[in-house]
Image (cartoon, rainbow, N blue to C red; front, side, top):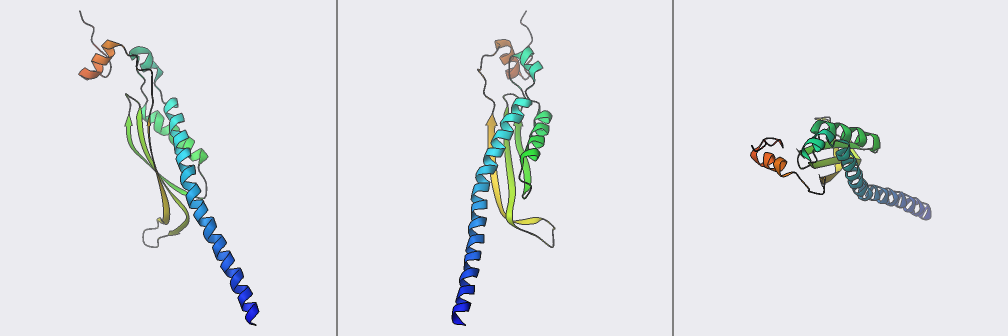
Amino acid sequence: MNKGILTIGIILLSVVALLFVNILSNYSTGSELDYYLVKETVDAAMVDAIDYSYYKSAGLHRIDKEKFVESFLYRFADAVDKTRTYDVYVYDINEVPPKVSIKIDSVTVLSAKNRDTGEREGASISTNYDAILETDYNVNPLVEEGLVNGNNGIATPIE
């Protein structure tokens, strides 16, 4: 009887250890996967949101805020893991020069539903990403003067 209980105890301990290792690996690799998912999605959405008509007229790169958010959410929703819950926070979007700050919170497998609020609680992974679209920085002096004067990149010609 003693050896049978010992065998069952060893089996249960190994199952618990296997689950523990699985959860820890899911948490650690999830953070890295979330970072690269956000990085690639933001970079692609910024390129999608470039306003080419503004670039032709002013010579500066500019992104459209609404187009960026739409493209980012479509791309992100298409590529996410269906077993997690994600919260997307867009902190800052600058149109000229193009800059975006995004935070993604994802709740892992270790979550439970709160009875009072109905929200998922558990071990969450928070990923912050700031992106700047770099250019060659060759600008028209009249356009630069218009940006400094607050004319939204449209300078008045000097007569």
